[in-house]
Image (tube, rainbow, N blue to C red):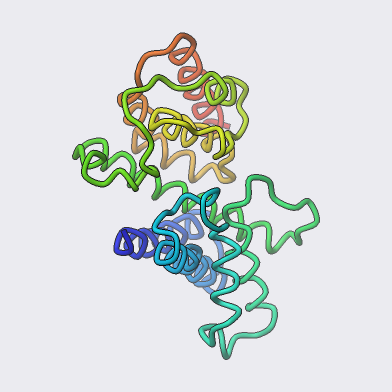
Length: 232
């Protein structure tokens, strides 16, 4: 499970750089995006060692834990105070359900980017687990949630209403998958939405969901949202 997060961090760094390049960012900003991508989940390692889970509601907020880990280390020594602030705050905020409204424009664009990059790789991890049928052997990937249960109405309502689902409402593997689909409405850059579309993320996740009334319509609405965003 620790190797899973190590590999995830490296891939998020790659995704962050790719998005920054797509956006035309200069090389120093692109490098900063890559660094934040690499470090965004640094709190996960002590979280798992201490609590044996990656489920924040039953352990700690891994963004805040990452902030603490970096603040208590010398890993950022040699960087300017502004660079330190940018990295620390991006790590602290990357997993927030709602972002503070008073963030500076510079911090906001980096937080938005790492959130997008993080989601891209989590989609990859989930879809690979679905394709390779590894969830039975590694249920902790999705928090040891029960299988073969239809999505709950609460999470389906969130998807139908284009809003972010809350972790505390996730009761099954299907709920976890729907929560991820809800994330697409929270993506910040068209480049990211285009990658989600090109990788057929929605169809892959939807293929693993048990039937429930209203689910197909919600997924079609999500696809229409993505199409409009890419064509805008």
